[in-house]
Length: 310
Length: 207
Image (cartoon, rainbow over the protein chains, first blue to last red):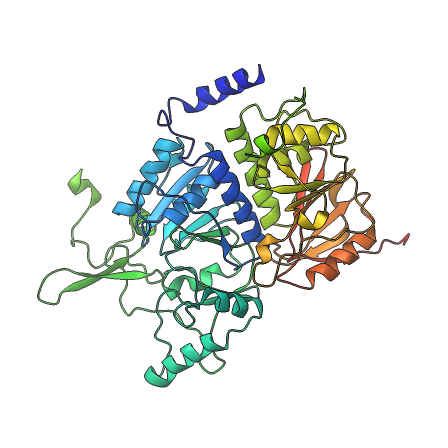
């Protein structure tokens, strides 16, 4: 009897919303349990990469399969999902992943950062401050920050266990010795809760300070490399640096050509073959929001009014 | 597979989740919340009826996290109703020694932990998750919590857990990254103490 009433409950809420013949959120429950157990251990050991049995997904490794598997394991029908790719909601990877979950899990999707309960991201953290109870899921290509310095997994595990990160500092030091400053501009290594050095995924270092003591839970999924790691809310995340060469983020002399923001991460867009360029916000939702509030950047046509195109 | 190895000779009357996919997701999110923000208390609203002495929250956690891949130790005999119930609904592997278990479940808190799997420095995630069922769980004090997932500090009071157990937990977790992660349950309530959480005993005026 219980099984029948449960079936009815589920079908009434889900059937018309989700794709027939597929599991809820694509993954089977056995896989989800395995990923959930890994995610709990990841949360309990902040910054440590927990191995998991990454499954084959209906898109190739490198397209966010780690993030998708994490999202699929945590998402429920009451969630609202936002997916961004390099900050934008309207790029191929973001649109596809958003549709994937709309079809297989029947969840609401949004472009508005504050309305989302889960945000899956490729290579950016939204400009709007994330709140407690939100979860941000990062897609990670190479989870091991020490991999280019030490290729042997056995060794990197020992280095992590003993907080033996001298080589990482040597790498940064060599950078300063060659160029006078640290030239790493994305995937800038961080140390979590004074222990594990972690790859923040290829976000620009502009976003690194946002990870520190973030009220939202941060989960990281690497599908090809089969690792899950996490940073719980309000956890110390420090970008590696030296006393005499403190960590610095990028800055621009321009403002956003569309919304005039001077506090957001800007992308350079080449507009012709004569060297013209403009800078626009990488966070499309943030930019659109500002324009809707009446901010006008220098790149918009002078007499442009919203009513002109209506 | 586990079903083939250990045939089930007894089908319990008590049911599991009405809708395992939907309900286990909701329970998991609550476990994730309390594990990532230690000391917060969440309530399980699922309709569950498990054999005594297993409480609702404990049942929900076990049904959500355990399956044929997990080795579990219970502080109850192998032929107890609870063991049969969990074996039937999850297909878990029951083990004889606590040190072999991925999940160790105490239906009443011990004075001290038996030997547990703490993981290794290189693979700390293999450590045991300990589930302790208590008589009551609230945020009125006694234990002051600090660490990752906690903005400043949080307070927790778990009834019937001897202070000696918290002392032992502190010693074990000083071996970080090795350590044990604890899930506390009481009736419908749920909280957690991952290995990174620092505990401070608050002395009341009565001592």
